[in-house]
Amino acid sequence: MKRNGRLPVAVLGAGLIGVDLAEKIMRSELLDCGLVVGRDANTPGLRQAAELGLPIGTRGIESLLEAPRPFRIVFDATNALAHAEHAERLGLAGVKLVDLTPSKVGRMVVPSVNGADVLDCDDVNMISCGGQASIPVLHAITRNHRVEYVEVVTTAASPSVGRSTRLNLDEYVETTQDAVRDFTGVKDVKAILNISPARPPATFRVAMSLLGEGFGTASVDAAVTAAAEQVRAFAPGYRITACVVEETKVFVAAEVTSSGGRIPKYAGNLDIINSAAVHVAEQCAAVGLAGIGTETS
Image (tube, rainbow, N blue to C red; front, top):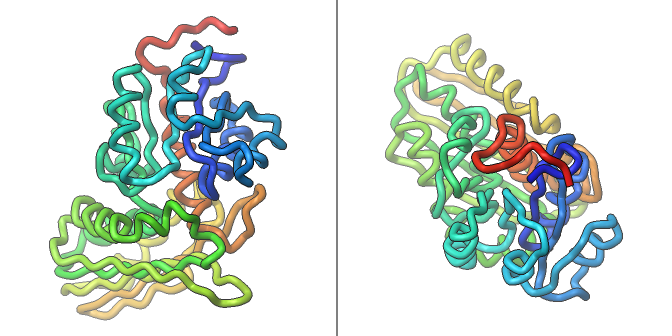
């Protein structure tokens, strides 16, 4: 059921990612954030959600399952281990999940690369912030160049990395590596995550190194530029800061700044994965999901 012409959705998890996600949903013309769920009413995230005027739940997934009105899409902003249970229980309830944990349970989606896939699966995995920032560029380069090795190094400011992300560091690295392999076809891949304690906090950035042969400056520059423009369609703070091309190697660096809201500008890691998640949910809302009526309530 649509509410006031917008699709009712909920956010499971009230950490750094969940609260920013809820605020982004509030700015959407297609989505209606009807519930933000955590486990403790006294946590900062749920207090912030309440201050925004959003309904909150304090019993985790039980709050969603017992909600008086159904939610067609639930954003899971908890942790990779918990997502497997959430996917099973919410799947039985006919809910479409957009997973912001590095669980690898659902189909991995990068909006500018395979965004249309979200219409055909019930569990969409957004990989990681590093994956969302790097894969569009890496996919574009590897489409027309022979690449034998890819290395992705992401750096995020310590204050922008929440507890759930810190619990999932191994999963973050493994999922990012697997996603790069899947989207590029390159088998030899290495992903590294740096959490920077620098003051002032460092802006989120990703450095990509590729080894291969036959790289050309014009062709690589064109691929990188086109990929960045596609990402900026939903994450305007994304920009390429370096692109160095040699015959056998390429180095590309990108930075992401937050596009507004309560999170600081340096927290581009939160901004890019949340912006990507909202974007794919809006795609679903725009075309309509099976079983959703046109009435309002």
